[in-house]
Length: 239
Image 1 (tube, helix red, strand yellow):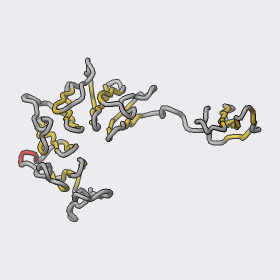
Image 2 (cartoon, helix red, strand yellow; image 1 turned 90 degrees about the vertical axis):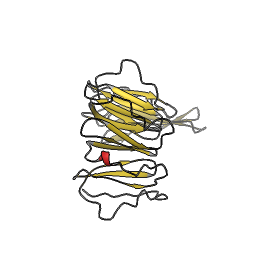
Image 3 (cartoon, one colour; image 1 turned 180 degrees about the horizontal axis):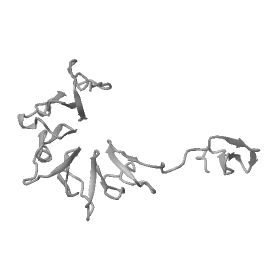
Image 4 (tube, one colour; image 1 turned 60 degrees about the vertical axis):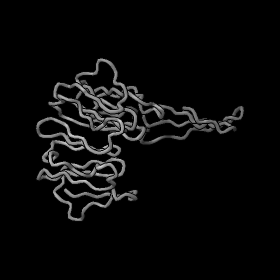
């Protein structure tokens, strides 16, 4: 595969080599990026203020790559983890004896590793994980929050919740994979969405005006009615 990059390029994060090809995986950090070639080489570009683009020789032929903040990670073919770059919160201090790892992820100053038995290990400035965290099949790291997917398809979320990123939506089930951003979370589910889409066709019924409230009633093709109300003080509409 080939790579395309766009957006802010103040530190060369979009300036990848023009001959970059045969790529099988990519990862993005704060101002640097990684790419894994089919021959096992790990390539890095962008800002290198903490050595995060200086790929160590031992990082060749990894199973997976990851980048977060100003550091980089690889999951080696032996199931161990290598981290390099900034170490202001201990994120490059991989715990001794960490092995049998099948997935890695990183957040702001912390790392996550999932082993073959479904156990998650955190290090660095990691948010405190919930007790009884087990049977995990997927992990993701956000800025100050983390996600884990249990084998039964449910999602666990811990850490910061300033923007609601730590509140798993009610009815979220059958999840297959996770991702986390700065202060938001993503889940890919099989089957139906959490909330059904609006009706394909609606009928506008007679609007009414009463007590400074303007109401409009719509009727969907399935017979369900929806009421949208506006008040003179421009309050949020209610359904």
